[in-house]
Length: 430
Ligand SMILES: Nc1ncnc2c1ncn2[C@@H]1O[C@H](COP(=O)(O)OP(=O)(O)OP(=O)(O)O)[C@@H](O)[C@H]1O
Ligand SMILES: [Mg+2]
Picture 1 (tube, rainbow, N blue to C red):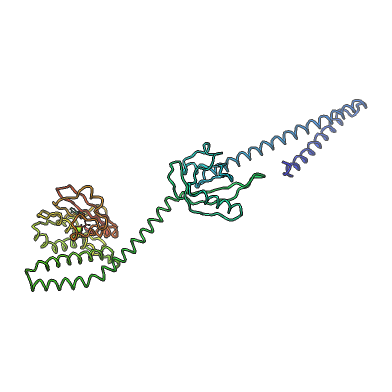
Picture 2 (picture 1 turned 90 degrees about the horizontal axis):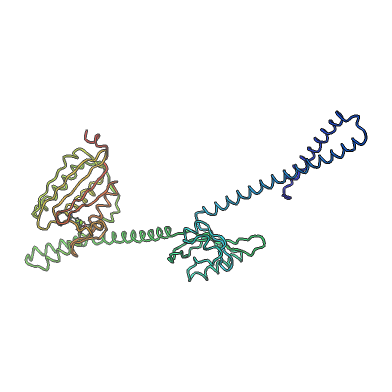
């Protein structure tokens, strides 16, 4: 309190005021009632005036000091609570330890991050340093003591579960009066950040591999086409040569693979325009019908429910995706069967196209993987596993989605839903 001059100033000034008021009041009383009193009475009056004044002053000073102390204690308690709250609610772990790694402070985030409560850990040796990291920490503590900054170091820590995990930490020196230096460590759990970073690196690797594959495919495309043409000519000259026939099969697959790879890693921009959904479907199914018939299968197409509705899409890509779905359906029915293409409008502004077949269906164990690039159940040299991956890229790129439903041995249905270029009512009115 001695550091607060205003406190003593207030106390002194208020005391002087009290003394002056009491003195003046006493003088008035004396003048009013004891003007003619004798010497002895006046003497007693002086004594009692001094006594009363000292008493009033003493009470006033005691009350003033006590009130001030209570206020200071309350301020201190509030400020303690505030700093305790800040410490506890701080999003990172705050740990204070001495040179022997004995824990002195341990906040709520540290409790949650490492799984040790404050009560069980304070006073104990820090248990969060994995065996191989003690020397690193000692070195960091040495740096801190020599005044160097230890900021945002990425390292490992271990919690109650015993599983090491990545953290980012900063250590600062912390001095308290005459105490030796303590180490204040702020730690953040960076598991999520590390996971993202690794995923980004993986993505970058995949993207550059994709570019490489697309480049390779691009270079292989023309020589493969030329080879295929030459083999076809050779076969015409020697129709019974089975070796040439199998070379042609192999080359066809290579060309299909290269084309799929080019479609999958397509780098040209999408050419989106408004197209009538029914028109596009009808033109693909008409184009593919001879292939379907050649495999003893039948096709029924019903595009009437979406007649007049338009989607904003790249026509080539849409037709490629429809061909992919029709080929998959056909491949699932080696002994022939039925393919149904149907469409429906989903109010207010979407359209759904379904390609149903009566083929083998999809093993439930494979259903979750069919959209993965290169996932195929076809024998080597028959399927690229890129068809559905291309279809999914198309759907996502056009603001839609694709899913497959299947009943083993009964068949499968692929559903694509796409947003309409305009609302249904508006489209149908045209
Ligand atoms: N209609 C379907 N019926 C049964 N299985 C299907 C159907 N559509 C897809 N599949 C399964 O999904 C897998 C992946 O299909 P996707 O079109 O991506 O590649 P693929 O057909 O194997 O190869 P490619 O398209 O190059 O011929 C197929 O191998 C097949 O097992
Ligand atoms: Mg396919």
